[in-house]
Length: 115
Image (cartoon, rainbow, N blue to C red; front, side, top):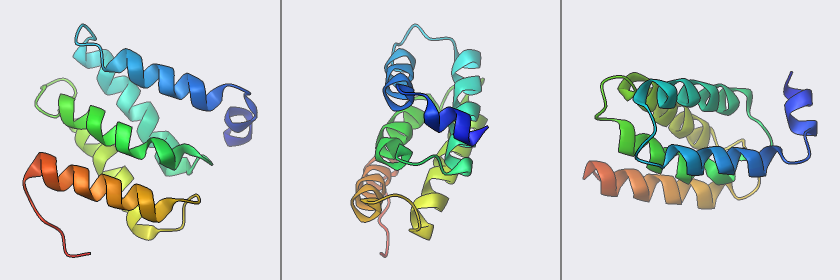
């Protein structure tokens, strides 16, 4: 299945479009939760080139973390992204993505890390 996803010519741009749709405040929390589950599966599958979207995943997930119908999926997505960037075996630019995500989480959660 992963090969099928990656062979789609517009896969990454379609994922970006999906993120734009989710940022719309009119999106329904239950639908957002399902999309977060899908995005989490992409992170788990380590889809090539997707790590550059991790900061956007985290930003979007943080916006929905207080919503009852999407909070569990939102937190799961954040955990998957942070676990993947901590491993550091992802795509090129992982260090930059890692720093962006860590800074973003520190800011959103008002915590500091010890990297």
